[in-house]
Length: 68
Figure 1 (cartoon, rainbow, N blue to C red):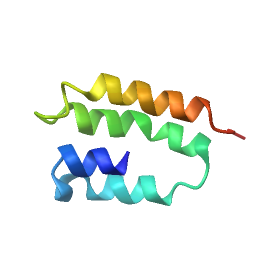
Figure 2 (figure 1 turned 90 degrees about the vertical axis):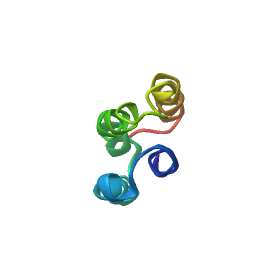
Figure 3 (figure 1 turned 60 degrees about the vertical axis):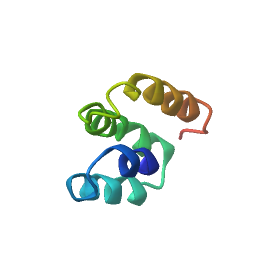
């Protein structure tokens, strides 16, 4: 998630979100970060075309993780 933010979004604009994502230590908490991450990606010119596919990949990955 952080890599896609750094790829598509302005680093200054999404810096706080990146810090929040990196601070997460449980998959369940990471799942809560998907919506703000998706919004940040989909608002960028390069990311808006790939946002839905990227979200699907992230959600699939989270489903396969052991969520407490």
